[in-house]
Length: 78
Image (tube, rainbow, N blue to C red; front, side):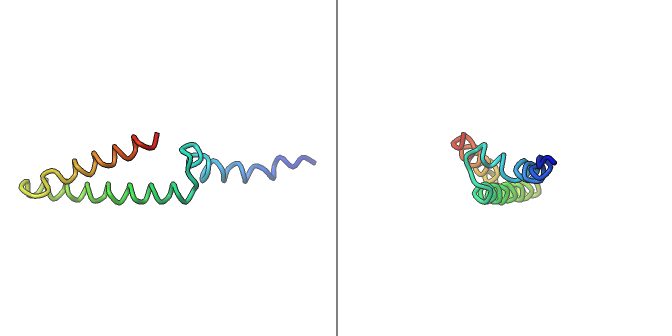
């Protein structure tokens, strides 16, 4: 009997949770931390853009400053 079937769950797990973080030289939890931080700042930028849409005098450059900073962070990783 072949034990290739026992490797299938590991391969599936690796594809879901570790392959991509490893491709950017991070651990699963390091990648999670980066992604959570990134999503937090995207949320803040979205709220600032919403506030600016409702009251144009507020948050005039907040969203764009956050996005520029996030872009620099992503560019520096590659």
